[in-house]
Image (spheres, helix red, strand yellow):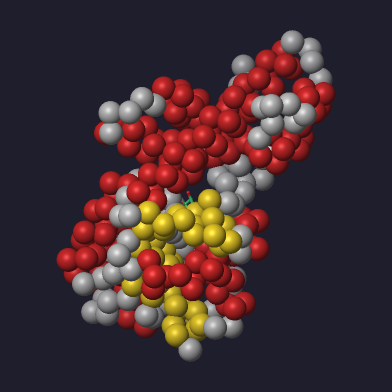
Length: 278
Ligand SMILES: NC(=O)c1ccc[n+]([C@@H]2O[C@H](COP(=O)([O-])OP(=O)(O)OC[C@H]3O[C@@H](n4cnc5c(N)ncnc54)[C@H](OP(=O)(O)O)[C@@H]3O)[C@@H](O)[C@H]2O)c1
């Protein structure tokens, strides 16, 4: 059986790597910075060791810095003598992704950029939407079919990352405006239950207003998509748009709303409702 590696067993990486195991088509090797994540796979000591035993490896870590660490840091993938295909599914800045591709390419590694849409539920069910770019996308297709229901391809590395950030900008703005108007409704003495009921029977109904309704009403925000990751995406998005000379008025305002509440970072991104408590 082909050996596949997985780096990053977080909220997304754990269910995604579990799907590789459950397919029974590959031998799975995993690395996570903090040891002890439960998975019936072979655990290796560092990314370099992982790279030396597998043919292809998936990276699913937090951000640009985390990717830099596992790819090029001490005992990173790049310090291995082997040259597996690197499939980076983390949501990162397009700039960093293009830089990773260039550096990996120079060293003889294939690099595929493949951020995903969908959260822990779709990751568990294998119904993510994969946004893929890179010269070797074809070599990752069987894995994308395990993780997702559809793959959208883009012409070069950086483009899939850009689309992912633009989608998450929409998500952040939708979440923030819902939280803002719900807070206003409460201040106006309108029942939050009734307000959300009407929202969800109107033209402004969204997936966010439906799926986050219970969190908002119960004021409980168990993390599916962590607040700190949405803030990271908004920051990357504003930087990306500004580099391209595009306006990012709502993205910047939403980023600032999210940035103001460090105590919410580990909760779900819908906890932005608490940022409106004054
Ligand atoms: N959660 C979602 O709904 C969702 C949906 C779509 C896309 N995403 C994106 O998918 C990626 C992973 O998200 P997640 O929700 O799984 O995040 P998470 O639960 O916070 O997990 C982050 C992972 O990155 C690792 N990591 C962080 N910094 C590192 C470093 N410096 N060196 C090595 N490893 C490091 C963590 O290792 P430790 O265990 O040691 O901390 C952990 O395995 C992010 O880019 C996120 O934006 C998330």
